Amino acid sequence: MHQVLLYDNSSAAGTIPAGPGNPCDPGHATASENAGMPKPSLLSPSELERSSVVANNTMNRERGLAGVNSYARELGLDPLARLRGRPAPSWLDLCSGEGRALREAASALPADAVLTGVDLVGPLVPRPAPPALEEIVASVSTWTPARTYDLITCVHGLHYVGDQLGLLSRAASWAAGDGLLCAHFDPDSVRWTDGSAAGRTAVTALRAVGFEYSPRHHRLTLRGGRSVDLPFRYVGADPAAGPNYTGQPAVRSHYAPR
Image (cartoon, rainbow, N blue to C red; front, side):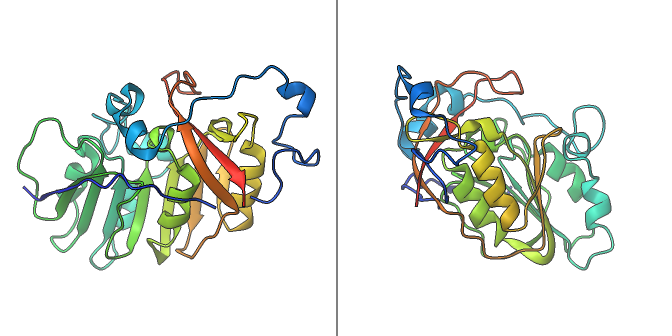
């Protein structure tokens, strides 16, 4: 079994134009709206990853490649169709859970395929992995690959990441020149330091650097790898925000303008 243990909980900084106190920012509440709003208790990356919301999440443990509970359904694309026909096709799955979809893909792709799954916990039941698959137990907030990929996915994984915008910025450069990055994203989970909404500003900034966002599906896509610099500074995360659009408890990520 190819499994790499790599724990690194060091802090990671993200990078937004308009911000708190600017009445022109559509994602920011006014001072009167913020009156009486309790300031959230923000956790560091290492504290967040030890919290019950992150450590015990089960959002992606058993999702397969196709069918009702699948990557194809959640992403609106067939990963195999995207990868077939490419020389040495490569797929990076962030927050991969049990890695079921990657294992199914390994049996359908050529032997020179490169499949990488990264998850904070990793498969709960260790089992031999096919030669094309590498399962890495690490924090996606600090892990960095040594190569680029044809396909990068993060199925409902950003809901449990502190610096979501920082991860998206980094992952954009991990996609090949004609690669595709696809991830679920909840704008409501992006907040300013005082807890007010910053989601609309975040989506505007993401679109400005090439991301497409589907509000209906809560899905971000980026076609073609590139260097991305988002104007946000990450300050911490709140795991006590409660359920998001999935109905499951999730994390809110807090930022300051850079």
